[in-house]
Amino acid sequence: MKRWTLNPEYATGDSGRLFADMDSVFALQGKVITQDGISSVHKVWVGDRFYYLKRYTEAGKNLRRYVGRSRIQAEWENLLTFQAWGIPTAPVVAFGSERHNGAFMRGALITEELAATRDLADLARSADARLQDSAWVAHVFRQIAYATRMMHEHGFTHNDLKWRNILVDERPRAKVHMIDCPAGTFWWGPMLQYRIIKDLACLDKLGKRHLRRTQRMAFFKVYLGKSTLNADDKKRIRAVVHFFAGRE
Image (cartoon, rainbow, N blue to C red; front, side):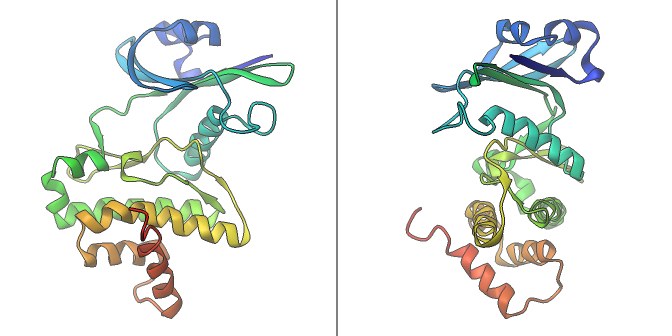
């Protein structure tokens, strides 16, 4: 059984023709961005813009082939959830999967390129001057704090909340976009609290190398929605800071 959804905004012209169904999408050729044993990401030019095409030929690890949602389904559902919550992300163009006798066979997700953006990890690698601009850093990390708090308040954790998965555009007051979230899911109880700490620690992994202590503390205050921190808040921050101790 094949299930394919094409965003009506892209259902005409070249995009409507080339993204019409899964067979067409798997026939598309483009620049290979990444590739592994179960998936590949291609950059394709259609009409007058670039798109990213992610294709999976396996569902993921363990029992995902038969039980639960596949990795590619998790990714498109998570991006759509971000959009519903008002968290900026890449525009979702089309998505779907094919199963045979209940087993996952293949699946795809297409997103429109966010033009003139770079991920935060790339900025860090290149020692981009914007990371030395206090006003720019405060503006960008305020958005990240709000988005992260939104996820966590809904009981959802990203599970790969690293700088490479956060895009910023080139405007002076840059807009932040969250991308690539195939491992994100909802949790509860102690596991939710553990995953929240992990999300924050993933952000702080590069944060402690490229941001000042006062900037990192400002992020936590915005995330917590507080101007001053109590003992429990400080305990949580210590857990975040030491989460990867001995594993880096």
